Image (cartoon, rainbow, N blue to C red):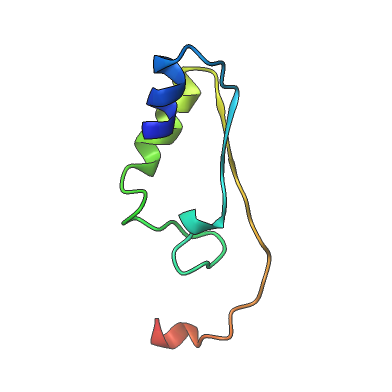
Length: 70
């Protein structure tokens, strides 16, 4: 949300915001690091309301962790 504010403050156009893999929880696909992004739904709503897009980068992989231990 800070990045969006900086773009707006400087009157820079922004059509799409890309989030690289650190948004993930433990780099697990289809997860969100809620510590780093506690208001991800607010971010997506704000982008949608401004007719902007959000792209989440996904690096496909298979975890070696046992899901029962998470």
